[in-house]
Every structure is written in structure tokens, then in C-alpha cells.
Amino acid sequence: ADQQIPSLVLIHFVENMFKHGVTYKKETPAKLSIQITQDHLILTTQNELSKAEKYTNTGIGKENLDKRLKAIYNTGYEFTYQQKGTTYHAYLKLSFKK
Image (cartoon, rainbow, N blue to C red; front, top):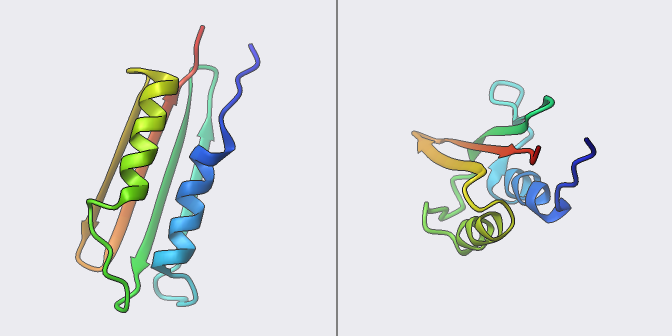
């Protein structure tokens, strides 16, 4: 079945990689992965955080995205993010409706 995903959901992750991340170092490249199956979409990102950024886990963008995901997918999604040292990881899984 055809599935539609609001582009603003995916743009959030790409935008944050470039807005808050270091994307020019060969040693620590920014990574974006999108896997699509019959049942779900999984998007992951990983990037080094810019030392100039004061990036916290309580960002308004994440809050807004979580609200948007809940409104669209109810409980059919997983959204997590964490910072390990200077590396930021984000994970999104959207379950497709049958």
C-alpha cells in the first residue's frame, strides 16, 4: 500500500545535522540512513556537535516534532535521541498503517 510521510518530519533530522553539527571533517562525517520496508521507515542520524552550539536534549524543535508525530502516528512511532560525548544520535521509526 502507498504510504505518505509528512516531509517536515524528515526535514527536521537533516536540518539539525547541518544546523548543529560538524559536517566537514573526514574523521567524523555526518551520517544519515533511511531504511524502508513494507512495515516501517527507520531514519537514523549521527553527527559531531559543533562546540559553538549550546544544543540540549530539551530543544523546542524536538518537542514540536514529538507532538506532531503523536498527532499523526499516535503510538505507531519511536523517536529517540542522545548525545554521547561530542556525538549526537537520532532515531526515528514510523510504522506504516496496514
